[in-house]
Image (cartoon, rainbow, N blue to C red; front, top):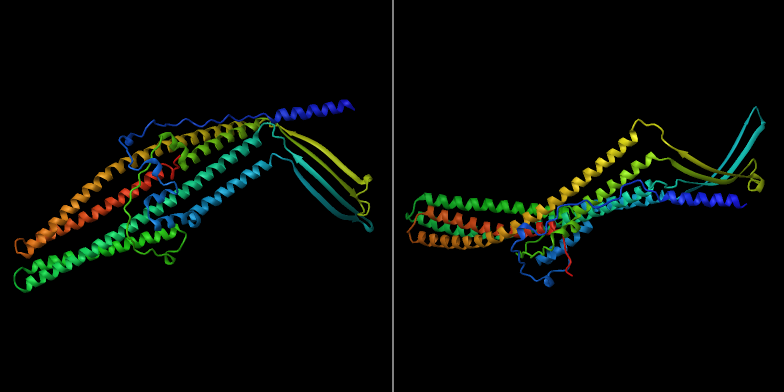
Length: 463
């Protein structure tokens, strides 16, 4: 009695040792370029101290209550985010399915049949009930590699969800800024049109009095009509922004309206931190790195095909020609089984699959490293744009103030008969262009701040 028990314990120990084998390569995060500092961050000195930065969602830094409400609704209602969330749930379900393969499967079966031939007296019944199980021991680690790979894929899906959320939020904020810019431009054009109408009336009076030529009146009309056309363009642009915001919120444009409001021209100061933290914060980088981990596990799965596969099975049940005596001990049936399979010759198919998985891993590593490089370039671009736009805004402001003064002086001199109307028209065009350029510079600074926040991976937490 002791000998069979010793054999049984030895077999169990051997199986436990074999189950610890793994044929896949050990995973290490691929090395990627991570500069010590950002090139364009030289001299970067945010005005706000770190402890004064908003600790909530990043869009709250713009200080607009309406924007805060809209951006918070993106995660709930945006269909692209909903799609990414569903894909993440699907990836998690795949992990659960892969993990289930590590455990035995058990099935309960029952059957009943009646068969015969020749005559009714030859008919017989057959009833059977049994419970059985089968298990494929993970000797070479292929099943565990599948679980690990599925987990990495699920983590990549989680990063994709974060990227989709960040993208939708950033797009909404940018569209909101564009809409408020259109509101301000509309106000400026309406004020300009009112001024052009006054100048047109003055010109009409001068033409009626024979003081000036009719060409001055035609120029004034041209200015007025062009300004009205520009106003319609701005109204159309605002409608496009409003429709885009509606879609981002998961609503039909007909069900959404955003009333005109004042534009808070706030440009948040963004803390840069250490460049290497970018590798941990950007969702696209995280997703690319997890794809490498999943590809690495696929190598182990492919290599496991070199080794034999084992399958253990067992069943116990009852069989009889009558239901009444089915479950008696004399009608019991049992079976134990062990099967093994080993590929002897496949003309190099397994080796080819292993090489495919290695190449796929190398491609994933290259994509990861390229994603990192693109991320650092994106941050550098936004830093350079932030610095340049801050200087441009000040110059645009000075240019707009000077153009306004020239316009007023030319209108006064025209009324006094000191200049012709062509000079007035030129001053008006320059002034209006300068005002709109200043508004554009202010909007560009805000949208660049949004882009910089996105390139840094979204919100941040101040310790």
